[in-house]
Length: 253
Image (tube, rainbow, N blue to C red):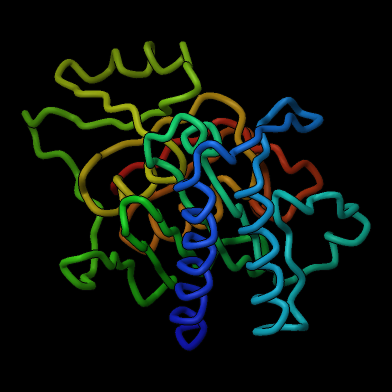
């Protein structure tokens, strides 16, 4: 897996470049609605096609579950011990709003758990990556460095991060346990990254997400020393028939 990590970073960055080509031509961005009423753009499809082609070339024997090719029956998926989990463009709503807070997510799942993750933010020019047991890292204009989740010290304002495009009333009651807190709204899987690099202490999610929304972020957060707790899910979080996640909480241990 350590040998694969640089190649997965390269694939994620290449997918990000494909997205930016379309992002930089806003007049050409047409938006379709998928069956679940979520938006779909040419950028989603361009990134998906590039990632599928590259992963298939790199690891032809490892199947891929991508948001844009998720109609693989459980009768097939239940036999996967190892697979790639991909969100080619996480934060399509942020892409459409042109706020730059969207990402490319690629994770490797083994025995139902994320063990490798890469999250690339094309507009921010940041790439987060991790392999369990080796740590989590971020690469940007300053170079590459290791990152660590950071617990709040007693008396410190607890920094929480939440969704920018999905209001979750349950978060309000969750915040009540922290007399001193600050809540920052951020798009896409960048919320996992903010806990992983110590920018935030906690990311509570009370609302629907899909497996591909969380796999890469899960791997990066855990490798950085955080925990990811899924509420109401028994067994391996990423080896199940239902692709919809329950509520979860990401926090520094």
